[in-house]
Image (cartoon, protein in one colour):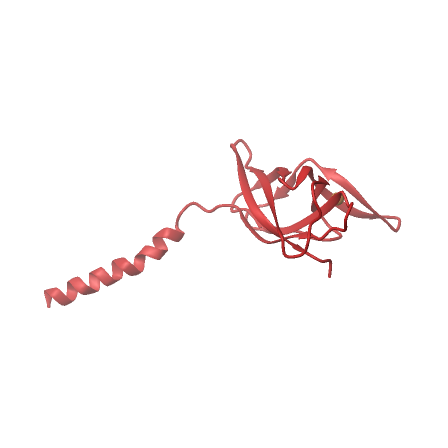
Length: 148
Ligand SMILES: [Cu+2]
């Protein structure tokens, strides 16, 4: 009887382990990261992704080894002309998925160092900051895709 009880207890503690691991402090999550393929000689490329923070934060900078610099851009329709504008920061409201997508907010790689071909991966680093806290770097590999 005692032996059986012990077995049950051991089983339970093993089962509890995954739960304990997921209880670690939540972090910024990035998914579906992709970069638009470029043609030879093209100097800029858009990067798109979904990002979600467990607490209010903002993306305050972006960079990539594949480009001389990178910026966060907004895109708006100004009298039929699509215009891009640099954003100083991208707000990440707590627990909301913020989507960067073609025609909307995006990351723009400027002065890219090589052609981006479908299937390749482009490393991108997002610098995320919660108000009054240290900046945290979140890195992601964006898969290069042709525009659909
Ligand atoms: Cu842009």
